[in-house]
Image (tube, rainbow, N blue to C red; front, side, top):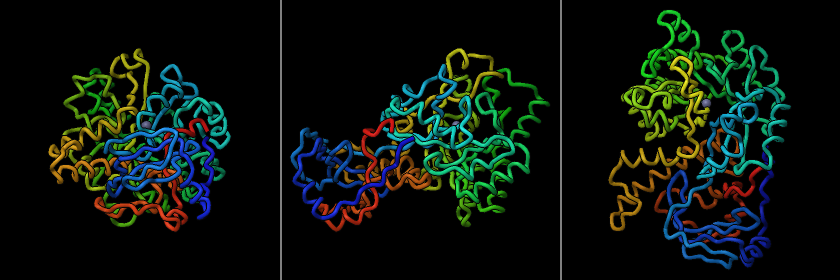
Length: 449
Ligand SMILES: [Zn+2]
């Protein structure tokens, strides 16, 4: 578990000394991306962390200097939905390898609890952190799980153990801990509200799927999968979740929204003030049922891949700012497991390494005129800037806020955050930085803490 040391707020004397110091690394002539816009500048690194942001043209002395050549510089990205398989499922992938995949842009992951054994108590979190520490190239946090009818460990869970709580309303091969009983689910929502913990929902209704399977039998082709795990299961589960939120006031983040109806319901709930947010995945944004025949088990996912109209609605949720986060749902399996017959092939695919580029590719397809390399066209630059800002909002700023990481991650120091894409940062005056309460999510130099 990463020790979340409070950033030290430097005084004016210290800042003046820092300005005179020789930094370990200076990256100049970059375009710093925030959730609100893009500003020219640079960064100076000392002691393995971003010590200060630089104004345009600023180049303090450093052991190593990199010319960014006008490229974008993003804050470290947060993938708040990964299954890194340690402990107990390391024949699929182990933490060290998963973290190597992540570090292509992602500097923090929040791991799901459905390992073997599962992460169900604060003690489990400490044991898991001990296993990972020293082996991870990225910083990490955990989501706690809930077993059956006893949510009491949530009351003893602090932010060092878990940022939030994952609840499965439908199960599959690696998700045996499904909360099915209405009374048990009620207790989980009530206890999480008492503990001030956010619930993350795999919101699909197991009983809907069980009923359909008893009628139709198991799927015999990959292309049939959506019919066996249809949208009705997801939509009815989200409706049930909203009713529980209304009753208990529990903060809820619905994962991997796959249908137009879920996006509508959750957007409406947030609009009327319910503490509800939702996540999109790169695969639901990238594939439709038309791809299922061609890609077979590789896009056998839970929730299932949906129709084109769903995909369009999910992109609208991304573009309109209705969705709060993107999560890769990185969930690798062995080749032999994925090649099992359709009824038994486990759902999930790896994706932490491609998430940002896959979604950025989709954004560019939707605005083909936006080209970051376009020299002359100011509008094209503005479009390209807006696209990377959206990524930073969904993959850094919002997940940092939702999961309590925003004192250290999710953006640049607050004093530098521009109010529009045209604004230029001031040159880092003492008063500006002394009042900053946020520090940048730097490169993964704190790995394994
Ligand atoms: Zn997942």
